[in-house]
Length: 600
Image (tube, rainbow, N blue to C red; front, side):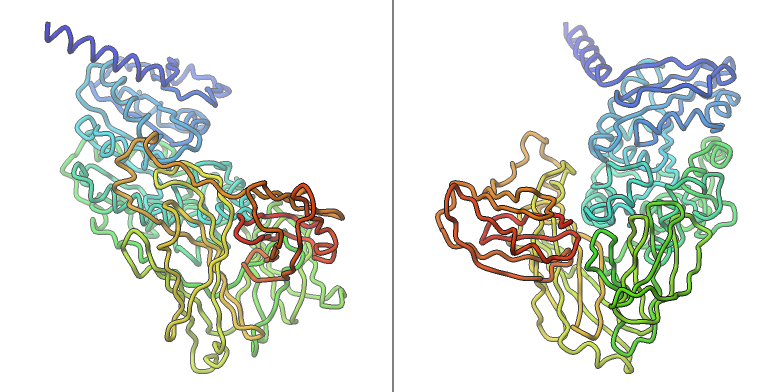
């Protein structure tokens, strides 16, 4: 009776797990139609044909994005053919497009149960490309499948996140992330989410077995068969100076899971290829095969990765094509500035106009990487005009740097901002200020939330500036930090931070996580303002006097004014917005949530 009950329970579990997936049988590699289109919505298990020389070993491939998973067995990827020829049973698991590490990890864990039962094997080998490697560690440790995984291979997996995901959390820069084709799933791939949530939680998990991971991290975003793809152009302007050698999506240092085996060293001549190429069998299979067949093989690189420092430095500020009020301003005593421009169109036209709207000459260096242009600016207070959306990272010829650090490891971190300069530029730091625009983007488990932006001010104490997050709601926050001394300099940093008890939050089920706090109702109609604009205040408002403040996207106050509510909670502010330059603004009324709007 006990055996019967156990079998019924086991069968029920497999049946429930199977309902999460569509199961598809592939033909042999030589019969596979290159035009095959797999499901782009439903999570799927693609079963390769069992080879005639089957050696009893099963290899499970997972990309991490449902509609890119078929790239593991199509599009000139040799993984399926290679494993078939060598006698391995190949299976390709597609989880979701962008629900993040924990949802994809749970689905992958369910798939492992289905696969081990179907092929009657005690364990499998996992090969995870990109976020598939993060799903693998979640499946193994958070969802307790570590005993069913002999070895996990991570190909270009950003275990410590990627700056590309950081910039995706800025609404006026999300077009940059969309160029990669990976529009969703960025929330749990930011550098701060991985640094403050994923790594502390999984690296200290009681079931963590880092020795099971073999890491293949690439270093050549500029050299690969896929370099023409728009996905990897952004690194030339952002990732290289910010995060060093990278494959176009994952910085090499980000691929280093603590305690794992690293096949390649940084800038290893064998791994000068990009993020897609590291996921191709013709590049990675020989190394994977060698580790499967020789379990005692020694590391090619050190097994002790350097943990990411929470400190971030900037010697630039950022302007956006979305804001016509954004201008390039030279720091005091600065003779020129270099603008590294990332643009949506592969090749774009740029013109520079002075404060009198007169077109001026400038030098331009077209980068060999598409979507990137570098220009030199020698005049002050100039405007960039282009036929494409863009973001310009403007660097000055001086020594001024701004840094952001997290100085508290508590559930409510304290953020610290510092400015530094050499003796020649130290006088420019007088009367410096630091402010930021933050937005709560998700709960700690990665569940997205809809929250209004907030303006935060860093309080000066001694030589530094501080912000204490103790009054913030638990969750993940994006941060656009800006520091300046009026007329002297300005700097920007895009980052974020985590508020709350990570361990406690991740051990709860999604249904038990607290709901968002209700916010007072306020609307701006229309949200894209041209001539007319009205505020509509919810009935719960008890005051008739309104203090209205307009900020730019850096959190700088543009104007403030007072109005009274007359009837039906409506306030006409058309005249107050009439002379704003085109761009994105933030509007705050009393203690209502902040509204983001576009002025045309």
